Length: 120
Image (cartoon, rainbow, N blue to C red; front, side):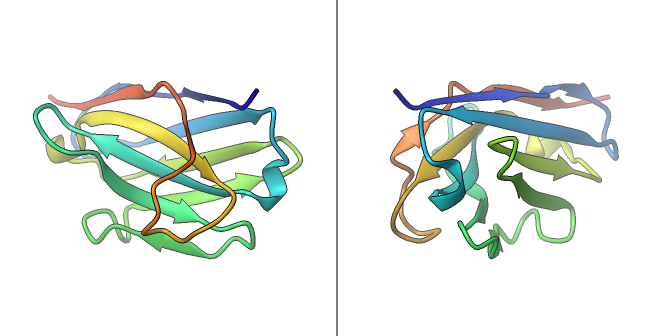
């Protein structure tokens, strides 16, 4: 049974930083592409960042230069370092995992999400 568990969300002031983690189990982590998506209230879920099994990365234009996705295959964990946070980054952030496809392909497996709120 595949399980993805996000952590690290919370309330942060504009300009601040957070690091999200997603711990995976039940899959051969190193051969899976991993991603972070977010969904703001009343909006569609959107891709934030994608990291392939070979560690190639893709970012949404809105987060380029501010967010960094990384993975630790030994710990079966993917991270999202978020710097210079803005109020418009407020959303529920979801971790995704997929064996095939690209950053344009929705993940096969999803985590339960973690709330990130950027507000003063």
